[in-house]
Length: 220
Image 1: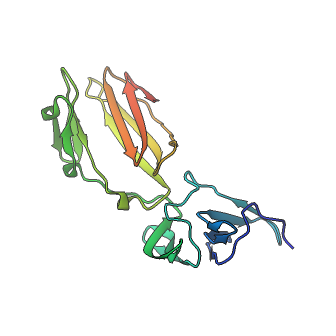
Image 2: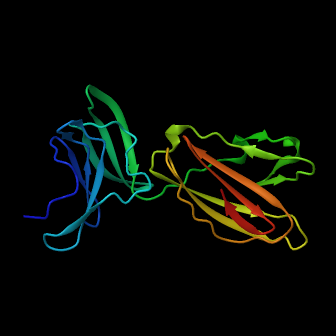
Image 3: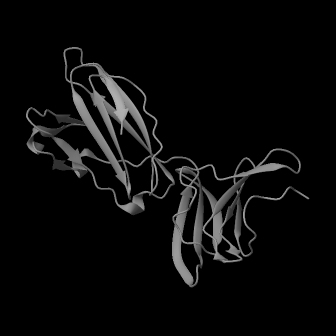
């Protein structure tokens, strides 16, 4: 037999196979009721493997449940697992989708509204956003419906252009956890010039603020 797994005893759970050999274990009925868990098993030998929860958000967004149906599919956004229904104390009529790889969500500049003490100083210029605050704050704000964030992790690519003589560029890549709890952050790139920009990202109750001042990225 294989070694004892780290997850709790259960029945009536769902298991889905992924490409490359890993398995996903979803939910189930434990000794104290429906379980709200997802575990991944990755094979490492003939009868050995590793159980883990290798996601930024290990707790799934759906309620603990048993008797659910799950299916693996390969769609335009890559490999995904769809979870359908189940019982969390009552029969559920919901559908959830998990994307194995990050999937980009396009947000148009025109879908934003003005914010700040000088919102009139921001204008849309083709595919770019031009802001020039002189005595206050100018910016744009986007609202993204919760149902647009089906994955456990959201990757946001940012490009900041500082209007100075050298027209230097800065590129930052930010990773945010798409739910309550901390944030996972990875910033890269640099910029030169005398300017300050603030980027605030809020997903559910998780909020992270990024700032570039005179070419240096920081977060708080």
